[in-house]
Length: 225
Ligand SMILES: NC(=O)CC[C@H](N)C(=O)O
Image (tube, rainbow, N blue to C red; front, side):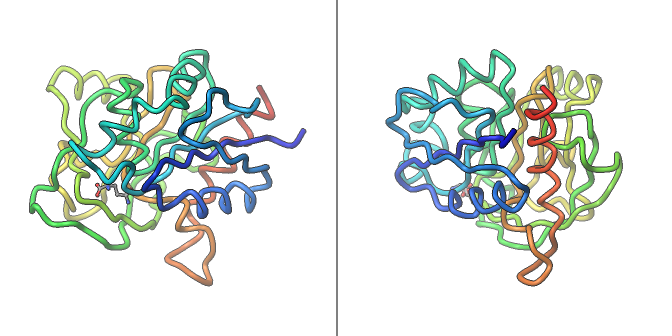
């Protein structure tokens, strides 16, 4: 079976092309979804990519969550479809209520753009099963509102349920609480992270091909479903 992974484009999205490319490199079929689409074209999983949807007006992801396609994504995610939110996509999933907490202005109030080491804290999700628990991966980070925040109760619940999926290694780049770079839904099917695995798919162009594991994992999850 050829897994079909939808990649959403909102006005202002930047990273849909690389996300589609990562899907293809992992062996899947990338299906373009437009923000105004009223259905998901029968895809098996969805990537909400990074960028500046609707110009980041109000706050990142705040308008995109109202796009028609997101109604369908929320419905499908609640039914167990794997959904990945990368950077602005993570912000959209948090705004849509699929993931808890919020992404706020970086602690230094500057946009941060760098290659970043991450620790894989959980390989029990639809998007991380191909990694070794505790592995360290190198992927680009590029965001202005990447500081993950939630109440202490929510943070404790995420930690206790193994839903902190990625943590920053070394210096905390944006002041995220507990160094959190990515989290999962309670059923492990929805994952959001601020760094960009879709930009780390080939050693030749760098900084690594560590990001591909996320796309291989999702293909496993839908092919073995
Ligand atoms: N690379 C991105 O997706 C950036 C997301 C968002 N525009 C921010 O600056 O935080």
